[in-house]
Amino acid sequence: MTDRSNSENSARAAVRSALSRRNVLRMAAAALPAGLMLPAWLTAEAATAPSTFDFYIGPQGSDSNSGTVNAPWAISSLRTASGNFSQLGGKRIGLLPGKYDVSDLMQNDPVVGALQVPGGSSSSPTYLASCDSSGKYSPRTATLDAKGSSGLFGGGVGRGAGVWDGPIIAHTGQYPKNYAVSNLVIDGLVLTGFSYKAIRIGGASSGDGPSGITGVTIQNCELTGGGHNSGDITDNTSAIWIDGCVGAVVSNNYIHNNGDHLNAIICWQSQGTVIQYNTCVNAGSVYGKEVANQGTNVQYNYIDVSMYSVPATAYGIQDFTGANTNGLTQTTNIHHNIVITSGFGIGRATLSDNYGFSTPVNVYNNTIVGKSGAYTALWLTCEDSGVLKVYNNIYTGVGDGSGYKSFLTDPKAPTVWDFNLVKASGMSWALRQNSALSNVIGTYSSPSAFASALSSNGGIGGAESHSVVNDNPGFVGSGSFASAYQLSSSSPAKGAGRTNGTSAGSACDMGAWGNGATQVGCNFAGGAGGTSTVPMAPALTVS
Image (tube, rainbow, N blue to C red; front, side, top):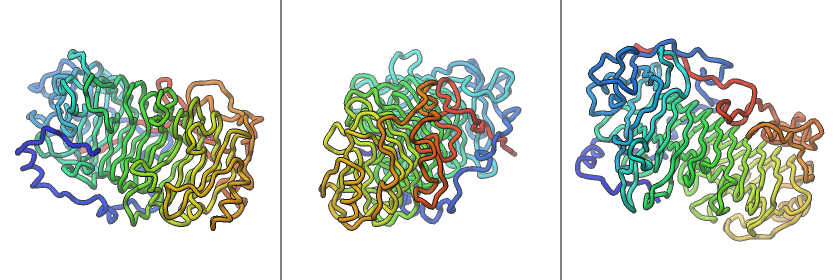
């Protein structure tokens, strides 16, 4: 189901007619260069936080104020209707401590936010962040509350079945009137009380929004307390929505306790997206929604969807296959993630089981823990030959509880499948037909049987030949979230992996904490997953 509103009107149609509807497949010309992962300030050990902001917004502010720390604007300045809005592009905007009740500003439309934030330039992005009472950057001091005094999720604007509630923050460039997109950093905010989504970037998936949005980062935020009212639309709900973007970064966020939300982060028709260091608990999956996603890096995340009572909806890292789009060339990397699931771990094209990855994909150094009713650890069927590498992964807990089998691929896909740790019993492997990915060639109950079948059906030889079979991966078992899944000194996975998944690689630990990892999950508020520091606010220069 695409994300479209029942409330489109002639005014919106007029706005759309003035804007390009570029197909996301044409974004290939703007693809990130090979090896370009993050802005320079995100790869440093530390970054200098801005000492002051250009404009300030306060819970008791007024749009008629001067916008200083002592005379801040109201939150309504972050709306196109405000006279202050035109001054915000490319500036640093500080939200002073406190709770901002935006329930009365919420819209009955999936694209229109209660708040709109314009973009800046590549050298001077717009920067929206929380600050302390003296005006210095301070993460998570400001809370945007969509429930607020209304007592209803999303402000209750839907008030009935078959409608969407809009996001708290929108960066879609079009509604209620045009504003600039691209080059935006959202840093250290708390968002709560949302219904359909909390933050929406772009709108390509619904055909009535911009694509090719660049320079967007969402970091250090906490998104919690979302939910639905009776009758609200629930299909494709998410906390963070990335749509038609190039090189978006979603980093070091804590997304938790959003109840029946299906996705913590959803990514539509985007390329070069970096989703990293996020802790997602009782908030749904990290989901690469079907059609044209490519070049995604899903890395160093902690995702727990084991609390969902219907295992078929409990996905950890879902899809990211690019299906059903041909001609995608950018490699997707899914690595150093911890997934706790009562359903699916990583993969599966959700449009149809006849689809698989239409991009090259590397899946390595992940830790997947199956809870009661667990279905499949890795579902990695591919539409092209020789595009899949699988190595250094740990799977433990409940084995196949569904008939889908614990691991699925097709013979032509893998070039590497080795150096993994699996259980001694209760595991299963399945091969699907190359040309009909929903059809099963056979199922197998041991790594050696899977390896033999893979080779005899035209695939690689030697699969799983260095893998470890052990019911106890040797987790330390202490600490919160990701910390509990570090390896003890006696773990059979210690030093049993290889840095590139082949015998020519250097020895390393298997699992999410191996092969160079120093942090998994976010580094704050109970979501701490390591000792290293992910940089917080970048130092921005504005005119």
